[in-house]
Each structure stands twice: as C-alpha cells, then as structure tokens.
View 1 (tube, rainbow, N blue to C red):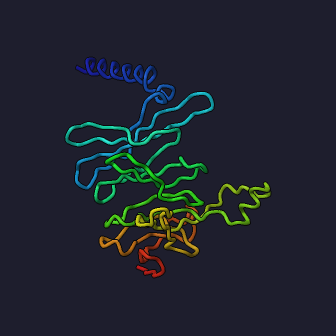
View 2: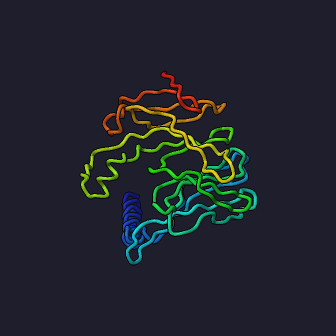
View 3: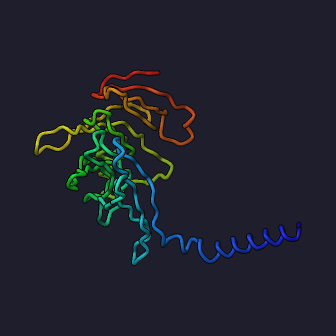
Length: 246
C-alpha cells in the first residue's frame, strides 16, 4: 500500500513538474488574455469586465485592456471599448443606462473618466483634469461621480520641468484629494468639476451617503506609506465646504 501511494505521489509530482516546465511558465503566460474587474448592473441584466491582451511586439511590451459587456440572460456579449490605449475600472450608472470607465486615451495621456451610453455605444470624456484621475464612485442618485486625484504640479514646478531644472525624488508622493464631477451641464460646456477637500492630508478611500448629500472618507497626514496607521475618518458635504470629523 505504501509503495502504491509513493508511486502515485511520484507520478503526480512528475506530472506537475512537467506541466509547470512545459506550459505555465512566464514565457507562456504572456500569450494569454486575462479577465478581471467584473461588475453587475443594478438590475442584474448586464455584466461588464476587463480583458487584458498581452502586447509583445516592436517597442511594446505591456497589457492592452479593453472593456466588454455581456447579457446575463442571453449570454450575448460585445466589446465596448477599443483603441491603442487601455480602458479600466468599469462601473454602471445607478439606472443602468451608462457605463463609466477610466483611460489615458486622451491627447495628453493622463487618466480621465469616460462615459459610454449602453444603448448606442456613444462615448464621451467627462473629465479633463491636469492630473491623473484615481478611484471613483457613482453617487446613488446618479447625478455626480466622486473621485480622488493627486495634487497636480504647481505652475513653478511645470516651468522647471519644461526647463529641465527639476529634480526627481523617488520617495516623494503627492497628496490625493476628493473631487466631484456633475453630470448635469449645458450643451456645449464641460462637465463641472469641484474639489471637495483641501488641506495637508491625503485621502485614502471614500464612499457616498445613501442620500447622495455627503461623502465619508479616510485620510492620513501625508501620502507616505508608513503613515497608514495614522488614518482618520471625516465627512464632507457633496457640494463642498463643510467638513465633519468622526
């Protein structure tokens, strides 16, 4: 019996080793697409997800991510985004008519928020910030989207960068603050963006109140990773200006 078990274990080990060596190696892994970030619409009719396709050609060596959509009843799906720039973090609007995502597909390459109408696939940018837009959340009423963004460079820093007089300090991080973009605007105007928090602190996470009137957020004195244990929780009015402290 022991001999039989030993033979099975040895065979399994050899098979596992052969599988690892001949198939699931880093060289082979880069040729496989990767599925991630699934989200379900509030009505349960749709699932959006990200498909990342490896690109190892000429000067490119990365993953190109695009967003796909599939119906939960018919299993019929389609690709929602395309192009040479990755699209990530899909989120459904509360009414299920729109899907938001973030991408650096703009001319300056900065990460911004986009909105696609599911009925016809029409896509438009809803932010055009000087910095990279970070994590974001829809307000429950669907009228605003809140997001974090690291403080952009000052005018003097931009000037020094253009003149190549700036220093690159690798362990220097910028604080992130909380912003909100209103999805109600005049026809030809940009979507209004409002900065909700100010001060010498770094916003780490946030969420909306059920009535969409306030946001609660965690923050720490600076963005340095070692300050994670000094986080606190505060609230801010969704229109900005009024802070609360827990």
